[in-house]
Image 1 (cartoon, rainbow, N blue to C red):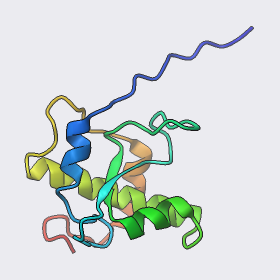
Image 2: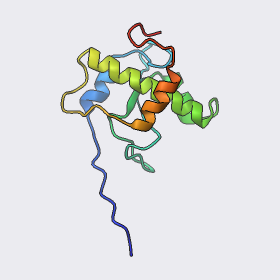
Image 3: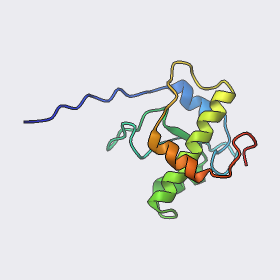
Length: 129
C-alpha cells in the first residue's frame, strides 16, 4: 500500500526576488552589488533540482552565498545558522521598507525560529547589533 502525500504548492514571486537585491547582505552587511536571494537548503519544498519556496530566502552577497552552498568553510550547523539569521533579518528589512509583496505569505517555521532565537541572544533587532 503506497502512502499519498499532498503535492507541495510552491510559492514563487519574481517581485520578492527582485526586492531582495535592494538590500545589503544580511549576514556580513556587504553592499557591493552581488546580493541575491539565497533559498533555504532545509525544507520549504526543496528537491533535487527544485529551489525551495521564494519566501524562504535570505539576502546574501556572493561570498556569504558561496560559504553557505559550498560547505567547505562552515559545518552544516554553522551554514544553517548563517542562513536562518540572515533570513529573519531579510524578512524584517523587506517588511519595514514595504518591499515585501502583499500576495506573498510571510513564512513561519518553528524550527527556524528556535535557531534564530538561540543565535541572536543579545542581538538588538531594533539597532541591528
